[in-house]
Each structure stands twice: as structure tokens, then as C-alpha cells.
Length: 357
Ligand SMILES: *Cc1c(COP(=O)(O)O)cnc(C)c1O
Image (cartoon, rainbow, N blue to C red):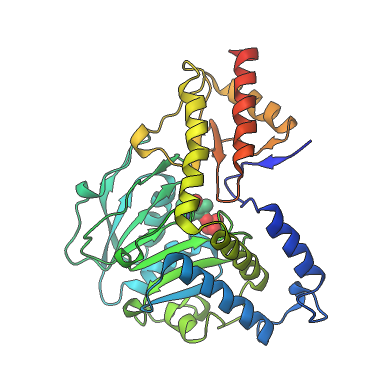
């Protein structure tokens, strides 16, 4: 039985990337040691990190004025590190609240400043950037590009935000082209689209560095990490290697425009299966905000959702239960989830409907 994971919490990895990683673990390039044994202070790891950054810069066409940091702590640590690093002498910042993750980001900022909610979404729709009530002098403006729990995704990027725009892109990072120049800071933990847990990538405009409040722990001080090449302390070396392999894979497979096209095809197949089920499967997200990464749907009653998830798991279609906060079902179609995995899910959905509909 072929097993495919639609987990929201951990990245799928392409078969050829996994095979390369098996070799790396056996021995890193005739170094005599495993990639897991490489010291972060050595030349080998310096090369691994440099090549990951090189591929990331190439994929995003990243201007020199942006710094790339390889940090730990996940997106959740960034929720607090953003105000610690970016407020400077200001006390106000703007937050768009559009779902579960942006709420968590807002709550984490509250002990450090007066974050203001400048737009509110609903369970089925996102607040369009044109409706955001932006403060003219906020230290920054934070939003979440893809609400993983709610299945909502901003289809376009905001323009002309007065304050530096900060985005949690954890769920849809590198799944489509990004107009980086519009952003002051972008962050994403790697375990969704880019490999193994343990690494968080922060891309920050140089001019926003050097304003951390005193007492910010050194590993979490953007400017100090930038000065020491993300090596204030031991970085997550193996997660950086895995991300590097995924970045190279993305480049080999046509870059971000091609990734976006693949993700559109995959998600369109799944939404069609939902929309054409005569109401047996339904999706709360309004069509214009439907995510192409986090596809949330449900059956007419929660007990049937559970049966669906259990039977799917038994046929090798794994981790389809929705986030406990909202229930229902969820298929995460991160970069490395292949189209044939989606075909298998669509065919299971049609079979399940025939038996239970
Ligand atoms: C998964 C997720 C997070 C949480 O990431 P951690 O690395 O577990 O802290 C934050 N934001 C979004 C949008 C996510 O999808």
C-alpha cells in the first residue's frame, strides 16, 4: 500500500530528496562522516548554509538589502520576537486578524506593546487589504498570508502599506512568487513546505535590524544573528541541509511560478470534488479566499468526518483530520505533495460518497 501524508504539521518530501538525504546521512560528500555529524563551525556546514541561502535568493530574486537568517524556535517564537526586535522606540503596531494563527501572533505581541487590530476576518472570508485601517506611524503591520487552520489564503499581496509589512508565510512560503520588496520582514518555519522541523527562515530588510530591545536573547536578536551568519550558537544544521535540498529541488522544478501552477492544479482538483458532491462535502471558505495549500472541508455530520478520516487512513491517505479548534477535515497540499496523491484522495472521496452518501 502506498502511503501519502496530507499532514498540516510536517512537510512531505519528494522521493529524490529523501534518497539524497539518505546518502547524506550515510556520508557527507567523501568527508568520512555523516551529515548529522558535521560541526556547525566547519567548512562543510558553512558551504551547506551558503548554498541554501544562494538558492533561496535565486528563487526569490532577493535584493541585497535583504538579510536571510536561519533561526530556531518556529514561527511561534517569531510571534514574540517580532515586537522584541522591531518596535524600537515605538509602542504601537498593526495586526490583521484573519484566523487562528494571526490571532496567536497578536496575543503573543500584547505583553510587549499595544498591538492594534486593523482588520477582522470571519470563518469564511479574509479582510481585503483595501479595507485595513492602517496606522500611519505603526512600527510594523503584521498579517498571515495563509490561515492554515481555517483554509483561507490571501490571493494577492497588499500594496502601499505605510508601516513595514511583516508576514507569517509559514504555510505557503515558496508555494508561489513573492513580491519581496513590499515586505519589511517575512518569516516561515521550514516544516511545512521546506523540509524538517527546527529551522525558521527570517528574511528581513537590513534597515530594520539593530533596534532590538535590551534583554533580547542573543540567539533571537536579528542583528546579532545577522552579524554572525546565523551562528550566534549552534544552528539546526540538519534542518538547514534538508531545506537546502528542497530549495535546490524547487529550482530544478521550474522555480516559484511552476510551483504555483502545480499547487493550483492540485487544489482545483480537490475543490472540484467538493463542489461537485451535491453538498455531501462542503467547504466554508468563500471561493475567492480558498487556500490552494490548506484545503478544509467537512461532511454533513462530525461523526462522518471521523469515519472518513479513519477509512482514508486505512487505505494509506493519512492525517486528514482538521485542526481540533475547527474540526472537519483538512488536506494540506504543500509543495512536495504530488498530484497523484491528490488524485488518490479524490477517488477515495468519490468512493466514500457512493457508500455513505
Ligand atoms: C504551522 C503554522 C505556525 C506554527 O509554526 P511553529 O513552527 O509550530 O511555531 C504558525 N503560523 C502558520 C501560518 C502556520 O501554518
